[in-house]
Amino acid sequence: MISVKNIQKSFGHNHVLKGIDFSLNKGDVVVILGPSGSGKTTILRCINFLERAEQGELTIGDIHVNLKHATSKEIHRIRKRSAFVFQNYALFNNKTALQNVMLSLTVARKVPVPEAAGIAKAALNKVGLSDKYDAYPSQLSGGQQQRVGIARAIAISPDVILFDEPTSALDPELIGEVLGVMKQLAHEGVTMIVVTHEMSFARDVATNVIFMDGGVIVEQGTPQAIFDNPKEDRTKQFLKRILLEEQ
Amino acid sequence: MNWEFIYRVGIIEAIKGVPVSLYVTFVSLLIALPLGFLCAITRFRRVPVLSELISVAVSFLRGTPLVVQIFIVYAGFPSILNYMVQTFNWNFDAFSINPYVYAFFVFSLNVTATLTEVFRSALSAVGKDQAEAARSVGLNAFQANCHIIIPQALVSAIPNICNEFLNLFKSTSLVYMMTIQDITGKLRIAASAGYNYTEAYIVIFIVYFLLGFGMEKLFQRIENNMKRYKALPQT
Ligand SMILES: Nc1ncnc2c1ncn2[C@@H]1O[C@H](COP(=O)(O)OP(=O)(O)OP(=O)(O)O)[C@@H](O)[C@H]1O
Ligand SMILES: [Mg+2]
Image (tube, rainbow over all chains, first blue to last red; front, side, top):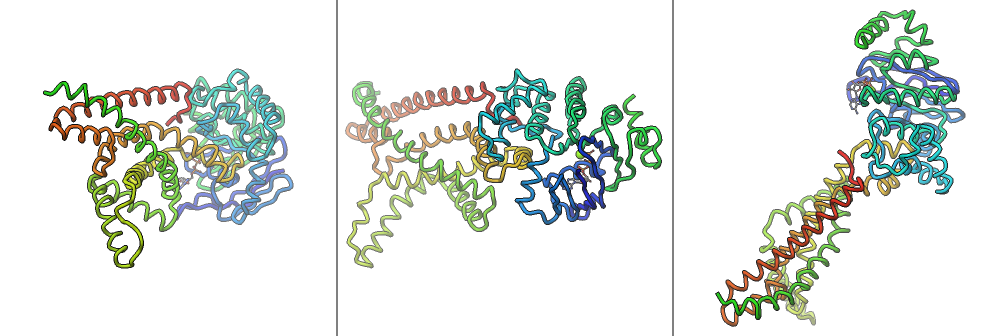
C-alpha cells in the first residue's frame, strides 16, 4: 500500500500544494489530471524528495516517513523502493542505454556487475530495446530514450513508479510506443502514479483518476466516474476543454 | 636577408629550443589541471571564503599582462627575498633560485586561472536534470559527481583545454625573459652575435606556426573522435 497524507508545499509565497491526500493499492494505476501549474509535478517531486515538502507523510509498503523531516537514510530507502520517469527523459548522457539502466543497481545497490547486466538487459528487452544496449542517449529517438527511462525505473523492481508527463516531450508518432510499454506494465501489475494529458490512457488503464486544480484535489474516482459523470464544475470544464483540444 | 643564418644556425637552434618550450608547457599544464579543477569545484560548490578568494585571484591573474607578472615574480621576488636574507642574516642566496621554478610558478598559476573558469562553466553546463536523475535512482552526491557530473564536465571541457594548451605553448615564448633558453631564447642568443634579429624572428615565427598548426590538427582529431562516439553531452 502506498499513501500520502496532507502534502503542503510552497515556493516562496506561492502556496502550490494545499494538503494532498490519496492512497493506492498494489497494482493500481493512479492518473493525475489537472491544468498547467496546478501542482501535479510538485506532488511527484515531493514523493521522490526532489523537492522538500513543508508538511506531509508518505507510506510505501512498510516504510513510513515524514516528508519534511526525513533523514538522508530514510530518503535513500524510499528511493530504493520507488522510481521516477522524467518528462524530458533525463538519461545519463555519458552512459549507454545499458549503463543507464545498470548504474542504480551497481552503484546505489551494490549488485554485482554480471547480475546487474542481466537485470538491465531483461529490462531493456521488455521495453523493446534489445538492439540498443550500447547506444548513447544522443543516438536514440525521443521515444527510445523514454523507454530507456522506463527500463531504468523497472530494473530496480520498485514498489511504485512515478511518471511525470512521460509522453509530452515526444513527437505525436512516438507517443504510442511509450504508452504501449506503460500499458503492458499496468497489465503486469506494476503500481504507478502517472501525470499525463493522455485521456485515452487514463480511461483505459487507470484504476483511479485524480483531478486537481490550484493545489488541491478537486475530485477523485474511477475513470468512469470522472469522465462520464463528473460531480464538480471545475472537473467538467477541464474535461470539456481537453476533449475540445483533442478534436 | 641573411639566408645563411636562417638555415645554418637558426633552424638548428630553434629545434634545440623546442623541447624546452614543450617542457615548460607540459609541466605547467600538469600542475594546472588538478589545481584548476579543485578551484573550479570550490567555486562551483560556493565554498565560503575560499570561493571568493579564488574568484579574486582569478580576476587578478587574468586581468594583468603576463609580461608584468613575469617581471614581478622574476625580478621583484628575489629582491624582496634578498632584503629579508640580509635583514635576518639567513644563509641563503636569493638570486640562486632556478629560473624554471619561476617559470612553472607563473605559467601554471595563469593556466590554473583560465582552467578554473573552463571547468567551472563546464560543470554548470551539465544539465540540472542529470543530478536529479542521479539522486532519484539512489546515488548519493559523491557518487553522482563521480559517475555523472564530473565525467560529463571533463568531456565538454576538452575543446577549451586544447585551446588553452595552445595559448600556453605560445606564451611560453616569454620564458627567455627569465634566461631560459627556449625556442625564442636560443634564437635571440644566436642572433645577437651578428645582429640577425629579423632573421631570428622569422625562424621563430615559422617554428611556432608549424608546431601550432600541428597541435591544432591533432586536437581537432581528438574532438572529432569524441563526437564520433557521441560521448559529448547533448545540450
Ligand atoms: N522550483 C520552483 N520554484 C518556484 N516555483 C515553482 C518551482 N517549481 C514549480 N513552481 C510553481 O509551482 C506551481 C506548480 O508547478 P507544477 O510544475 O507542479 O505544475 P504542473 O501541474 O506540473 O504543471 P504542468 O502541467 O505545466 O507541468 C507553478 O505555479 C510553478 O510556477
Ligand atoms: Mg508538470
